[in-house]
Length: 267
Image 1 (tube, rainbow, N blue to C red):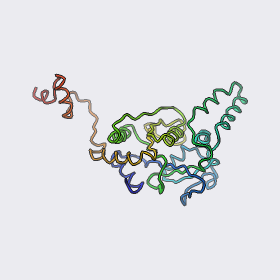
Image 2 (tube, helix red, strand yellow):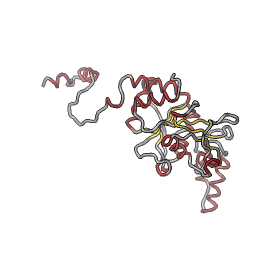
Image 3 (cartoon, rainbow, N blue to C red):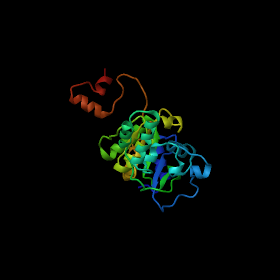
Image 4 (cartoon, rainbow, N blue to C red):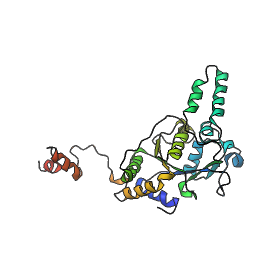
């Protein structure tokens, strides 16, 4: 296991050339220390932010932030990160129904569908770029392009030899990239939601790959193994017909009675 988060980031950069450092997220319990210099948005700046903006401040500006309920300016994580219980969340949707008319049933069902951390278990959310995180993350969020995601999935495959499963929603990415990873200890792939794009300045070609604490050692071992076979520069885009193929292709094609690369080259 690598000794520091800086080393872990450097390992990912060697493999995939990330444009920003990964985001380290830790759920803070009552009594646990907060890193000196961590920004508490409302207390320190007099302004509120959305959680997706906290992720963006961490990866784009290198900030370390700590958020409690009063710092948030977006509703969803207040429910899903266990700052209020689901019943109070439902009451909010009942208030919306009273304001606009109609039934509150759909809003209540919406709240029931969320994966949530236990209410009151945590005091707040600590977020930092992995390069500055002097703590073990509960989840590491890697904002990457699709070709970089492919490399990370290859890294995981070197260790698990299994398909990675995820589920997808066009909204609430601050929840779905984090909460299931914590609760289930599984990797996640998440599409950044409109808030990530509009307010968190997430590029349109980014996707989020989540590494839970339980998978850290496996993941970085896989990244090191994949990196030993070369980095992203070994892949080149081409539209050439009868392209050069690995030898394993020729073995398969010969077994199936089809033309091998060697036979083609002799034509």
